[in-house]
Image (cartoon, rainbow, N blue to C red; front, side, top):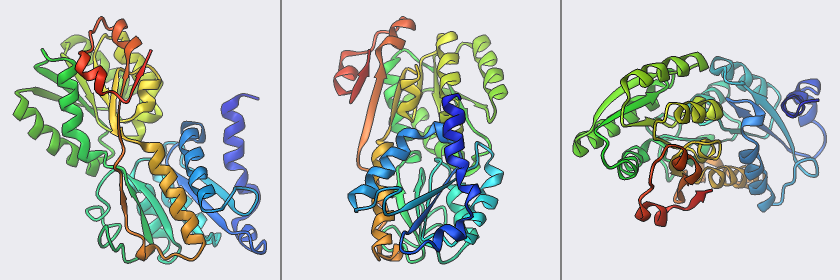
Length: 329
């Protein structure tokens, strides 16, 4: 059996045992984990989530059960999957996937089950909580500040490619709210730096190929890839396209750089998921999500793939290398 098939089997095994039956199995609490992606795309994040749970005294399979619902990239399935978890009387719902749609689906599916989220944008602006300090409802979690780091990420890309004047921007049009917020900050930063930008849309693998066919013809100086769960789920494909077409590119998530991308700058996403696990454990112990302040990430990491830089015949400035949290050789 292939690894992906095995992991998918594990992730979908919950369907065999109804959630309501699980929730009635005596004292063992049940956490529902809702994610927009496929399980093999988030192995590191799941492990970080479990570490957070362990910090509060909970170990999967020993004193807590976790049931998983994966949208497998089909965002439209999230409401159905969230409703399934709500019907199953889980004690806590944890949402991931890098898209607020998962959390919004969980919120719409129930008004009482405590829900812990990891979202890339301001949860107050998204309408998920009343305030960061006092969420006030049944939701709380972590804002890992993807949108807020847009300008800094563009600044680092310019430092990496100082002669750049034309930058292509790749966004996912189906993430309309996040794209609008990112573009607002990016346009302001690009104007201040004297950069010309051109936006290309992609929400499928075919779209990615089409976008890079355009880039191959127009030859921008660099590519800025907006933070989005879709791009992370296609990280190998995306990294290969940037290298194949010899285009320096900046990303928001280190996983894309680990897959061969050039550079990323963003929040420490594993720490964010660890904190989601900590909050889920605290709620199981009796804490109210209304009183748990939303955590804003304070750990940020710059990751550079030196091997990819050499393949692109690009010299990374020593000052940038010195500031990198990790350099992949």
